[in-house]
Amino acid sequence: MSCPLCGESSLLAETFEARGLSYCLCTCGLIFHKNMMTPEALAEYYKGEYRNWEEPTDTSFRKEGQRAERLIGFMDFAPANVLDIGSSTGLLLKSLQSKYGCDVVGIEPNDKYRKYSRRLGLNVLDNLGKLDGEQFDLITIIHTLEHFTEPLELLEKAQNLMADGGKLLIEIPLQNVAYAHPIVFTEKTFERMLNTAGFVIEKAEATARDMRALTEYGRMVE
Image 1 (cartoon, rainbow, N blue to C red):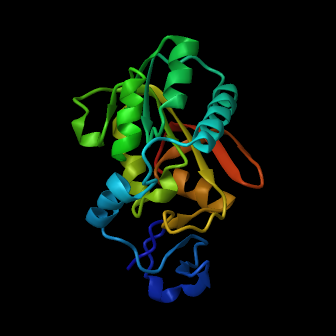
Image 2 (cartoon, helix red, strand yellow):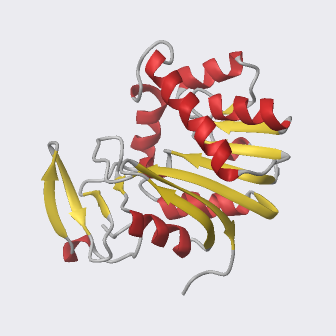
């Protein structure tokens, strides 16, 4: 297989084991699963197996509530309409809707989380293909990009859904090795991924655990 960032063959990369999982470390710096699931298998995993409990847990609510507060403070502007890809419990969408009165749409493949969000009165769909030509002035991808085997493809889809002058707010965990994370980001590979997809970073900040960035779509970086 090829590196999801630079396209080089993984045969040129080093390999290592972590938490019982096999990883490739590409020469570009990106870390990714040595044995990637197919897109079809990945979709089935997130639909039913991932977070396979009856309702969102208290821990989920606490983490996502704190995250929503932090992200709204970080972005510091009022959107008119928002798309959250990987909307989970819907707390970020609910917080944005309450603060700004904006129209919100979520994408959440997990059945239990999507149904829960809908009970909150949110419009949450199971995949991007169900959007009907909408354009958004803010798209959020929060702790979601690392779950995709083809993250550049997801960023391209996001770009196609952005209104003129729209922004992308994105956050990822740093160096977080997990079965559910086929991609493991560092600060440098996260920035390079965004630039390669054609996004210009307006501002960014990182902690020991995660990194967030507010971006606009710009000229494709060569």
